[in-house]
Image (tube, rainbow, N blue to C red):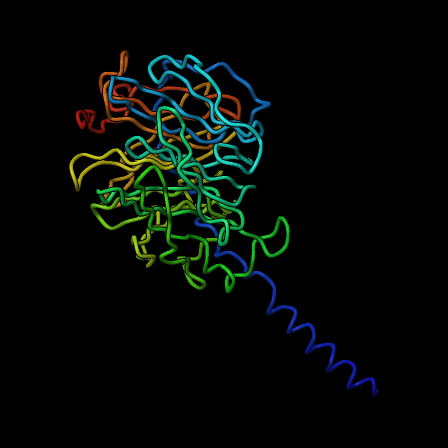
Length: 363
């Protein structure tokens, strides 16, 4: 083969190789335009720390007899930790390591709807549905579809029917973000039916943009607002982290919360709802030094406030109750603290410090 032909062939190979590489993320927003300074809000209490468990995501359950539980996923322990929501007192641990019913393999995202608990298992590659308060296993789904699932959000449609959305941060090469063209399955929507003590599911759709501003490169946190046909999804790619708004059926709306609010990493998301239209999104900028909780308008995504704790850092998941609890007349935000525990922050204190509404309590 001639030397000129060899050079040509080499150039062709290099071009083909470049086509298979992950697309570079969009340039990060200029962070010199800083978000407003966060107000200081101190937590009411913290659970006893246990970093060996690798605490990740909280959820709140309100029982029919006045029970209020703080449920927390312990990834390294393959279990769900149960605390009193009003005090943080540990009640018990639920689950063992395994693939059977009510067993877990690295449980991550949690969600509660009524008396049902959804548990996403990253290493189990499934979603389990359990009935509270006994943690009775009703079934699991996603085993044939999910690769590396993390987050979950639920919409109750009544009559035992639920829409559920699961984020899947799958990789084609270990510890590497796939090319944009391969990112069309970042979110999966399932219809779940619960009846006769059994949960069954049907995959409705998979989605995620593969070009443009809606591409989801690293995903975990997701929150649905069915009343307004919106899903808020955290793009967690460091250096380009932001929030992106999709419709419930998987269409990117073009709306984002820019990276300047997330110089670290966008993480847990909850919705403080005031009726069907008003309220606030709360989203975390997960930082080991400066850890900030941002408040955005529910409809416009305009930034309306920010707060942080002098002691709570490196927050993964957050959960919210708008029901009054002893010591929390306007409800509370629950935030994971540095992989080892959960802190409770009074919504009354948040509202006072940031100027947002604090009167949208639930019964």
